Length: 189
Image (cartoon, rainbow, N blue to C red; front, top):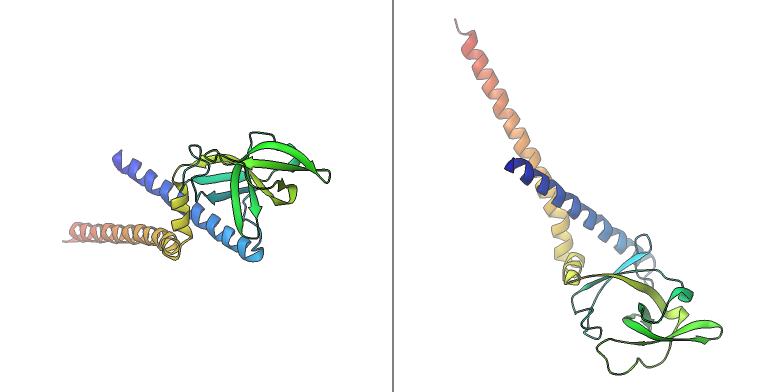
């Protein structure tokens, strides 16, 4: 019974590691194809929290999962991610919605900040809308994206697969030798 549980847990961990590896590669390929756009899977994006401006809801090191959103669907109180400049992403709460050139524009503020963000967030700057927070998950994702993490995610599953196959081959060889020796014992005259 315990062996079955251990085997099941090992298989589960292997599937999780393989899924994370595949998704990491997919994200890297998307990023290389379109460096100005945040990689997504089925419209969902992952980001790591770097500052404490959204405390207590989001802490540094947390992982945010967000989804593509139509600017017309954003409401006051929603947490959105938007671009500032070319490479900076900010995730703050919408506190007011106005219109600029007929399109929605958002006044935002971090939950831990005393003042609203400078300037309005235009529809063109909107990246995604907050869906889920995984506490401290950003540390794990950042490690996976590092060269050492990527190597471990490739080498560790391969090691477990090869180790399992070698163990199976050795046990089969032992069984065959036992059968041969017992067959020889039975054949002796």
